[in-house]
Length: 273
Image (spheres, rainbow, N blue to C red):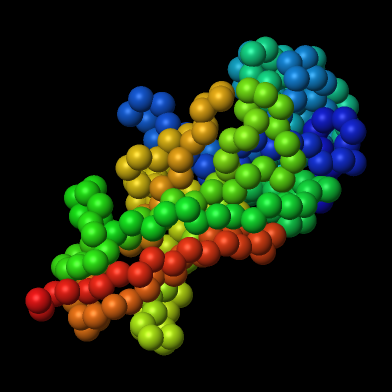
């Protein structure tokens, strides 16, 4: 467990970008390998643990100790390469115009979520994820749930709001939930049990998994422009595995602290009409 890289060290700060959320630039697609902690330009940034400094570029600082490394991006360094620093020692200041420090934890060769239980503290999520839409589609085209047949993609749109208010112009923008699961029910009975195809979890996902997790139409947040998070729950799910008739898809989004939200979509399978 470690404290925040900003003062006050023992109080949570607004986080405007979550771990594994989408990062989209032109044709590039990637998962966010840290968290974005909102802070005014010029804010002092401090080491959360002691170790040896590595300057990876003009605006990035990392501090390594054994197999553990903490990274701080969008920071004007106030330390030297290979300098040894102690916990809570000044590393630099938030660079304009970024209005945040990108903070990452690299443990035993893998990026992990600093907001996971037992890591950055204190931290408490106070918001509940929401599922706002469920769609059955084929080749990117939404289908009417009144008569579904053949193989379909199952897509859900979901988000949650930051637990602490983020200053403008990044205020009111959504962040990603940690997990999505879904099931199918008919007449009060589960006919396809819960399955969790989206787990943004605690470790960084590989870049090649992006198009499996995020569906077309996904957008990342921009200043004053909210993102949209569209998740593939299934690719080419075969509806012929179930009898014709009415069903309900239930989708649940949850975060790492156990908060969850659900949405249901009634639909009818009509393969033999």
